Length: 165
Length: 181
Picture 1: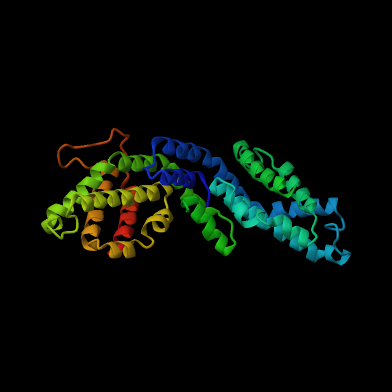
Picture 2: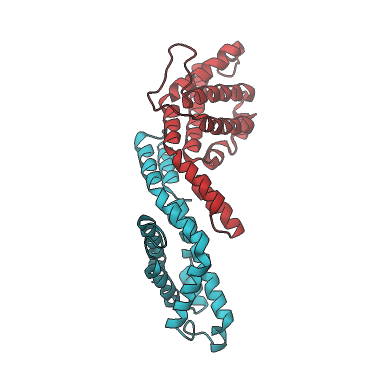
């Protein structure tokens, strides 16, 4: 799974040489920045339930009947539960990506094929965008996390939003 | 290929849980000791040719039959191949130390190594002994404690306790030994 460490190792391996000082420098740079990423990941791990719930509320405020193409009966409790489940799933992968320091987990476990899945299920990606945009605007430093951690968190959310747009 | 971080992501994903609490504190310890880890990798890479040459010279001294006709490293061609393979194994151990995870070593070096050595007629006992010598030598370089014999090659690094990293590196060498013997 792609991260700064594995990228440096793969580069050294393809040239069949020991890790050079520039490889070690790039790893060190990544390790120095990783404290903020881990802080954001920690905050997500402890607050994912309320983050997802707020996102669901934001989605249903903007789309009172749920995603376009859904039947009204599916917009009741069941639809909201499934919507929240999906947001929790994305938050979990954002948590992994922040820990790894690359978008590998998001790419491999969610984004590859997501467009086809939502099209097949006739779910409008715009509903997800509404929820993620709410998360993106809701995060606040230093109330929720430090400003550097918030930058990392928002960066991951932007990546997801762009993948859905 | 995984590292200490993606290993946590893979194991959390298998249970569908978030990475929090205990796992994050382990990763924070990994980051806090990051400079030690880079120094350890540097200690291996800077002394690689010395470590490799010592290990191969060591097995030849311990077992003089190796260099005699029909021995495992008889002819310079076989000796050169032995030195090259030792260096490759040491290189993958250095990758594993850098990543903090053995997957690169297992996937790219050890997978099928026993069969390859068997097909090429490499004496696995001697090969395992060479790896054991590399283990002792590399761990001494990591802890910067290789000052018992002249020429007392020591690195000019900040002194600190690297016994944990030396133990981790030793475990990777042990994987190599158990993979070939």
